[in-house]
Amino acid sequence: MEILGKVISTTGFANLTWGNVLMIVIGGIAIYVAIVKNYEPLLLLPIGFGVIVGNIPTIPGLPIGVYDSVANGFPQNSVFSLFYWGVTSGIFPPLIFLGIGALTDFSSLISNPKSLLLGAAAQVGIFITYIGALLLGFSGKEAASIGIIGGADGPTSIFLSSILAPHLLGPIAIAAYSYMALVPLIQPPIMKLMTTDAERRIRMKPPRKVSKTEKILFPIIVVIISSLIAPGSLSLVGMLMLGNLLKECGVTDRLAKTAGNALLDICTIILSFSVGASTQAIRFVNGANVGFLTSRSLGIFFLGFFSFAVATFGGVLFAKIMNLFLKEKINPLIGSAGVSAVPDSARVSQIVARQYDKDNYLLFHAMGPNVAGVIGSAIAAGVFLAIFR
Image 1: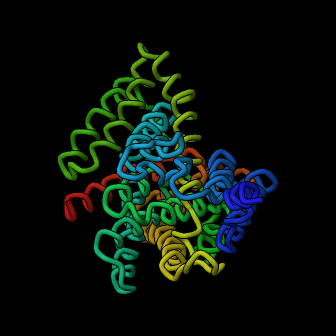
Image 2 (image 1 turned 180 degrees about the vertical axis):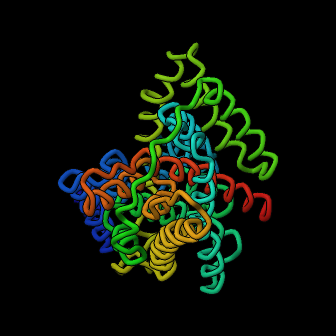
């Protein structure tokens, strides 16, 4: 009976708390949304499964979870902790940027450099949320990490928080990826509120054709200029532009395909799962037996939503301001694509425009500020690194 009692005491059932149950339910909801609603399934499904796995309770000293890297003073790395090390060390986000660069066509931005301003304008959400986080009592490093959520760029949020606020990495990553998945729900109401029916129907002229030379020179020029402006952005922007150069140069197709497919998928799976597994209940609830999210975690989710909304608002507003000075008007709906959820926010611009004019095609035009937003959020992260490191 004594042995049986010990066996029972080591089971997950004996150590299960209401906090674990709550987080497992949240993981199940994420999986449901990914499969049934098809919202960012490549991200939400491994994150949701990771949340479930991370909240299976184990006995102390058993090296299984993402935080179980040391026991009794001796290294006892579990498989999951090694995965998570790739997140906290900042390895996976730049590799994901490499893959994104290998998949992304920058022609829309090159052909219309004005769209760079729209991507920059959308980053206002980052800095306004940074101030809001400070007012709510977060430290400077924590506020900077939270503010980046407004860029709707999960890898950048993870990269910055892993350096400045690793203790908040879980909730920040969950918030960033959740709002990326909810782009089709969050952005359209803001876009419609800020634009008139006539503005939504504006048709933009087809962009000029971009030469191969321009496509090759663009990533080289961007990495030099952006890294000189914010050296802290070099890891992200450098890998993004390397991936794009591999794609556009025409002599490294194998490397571009590997970076944009196998490598990107592997890093996405491991990073998403590890982030989900890091959401242990003890770090998300007020004690092991209370099933409520902590005020800090809720504050991060609220600030993340606020940051995302302000970024969308800023992009659309700046597009309207630009139209005051432009002879050839731009459709202000593409301003919302300045948040760097590639390519979802650009697709939303297209979807909303076609609700009012079925023959209005904005996707290519929206990809300009969308790509600019990726670069802008990485530069913003580099600025915060320079300030707080």
